[in-house]
Length: 105
Image (cartoon, rainbow, N blue to C red; front, side, top):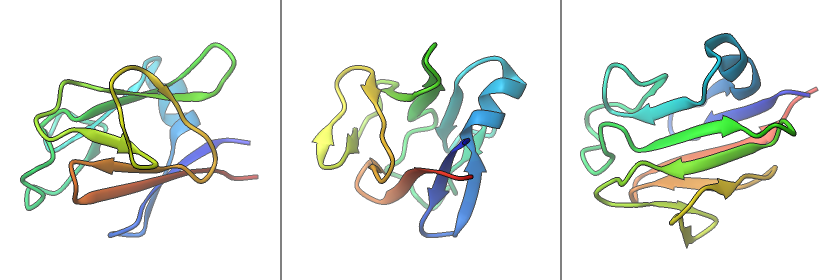
């Protein structure tokens, strides 16, 4: 079952498993055009490159904050090091952009 990232404000879904496999690397999320998932410019508190999300050797997702200005939280806990992700986790970029992670058959 692939891991799916869902942005709640725009109802977009991204297949994290497929994206990482196709690129051969973790994905980047932020406001910069070079990111794999681009956050709209109007979310000015989200950094240009906010987080990296990849898959461990076991195929489990893990998130790393890229020294963002306003921080990243997973389930209300500030990310300070690589953080494993689980089904149902809420990822806040800064205090304004929410992403959820889950599995899909």
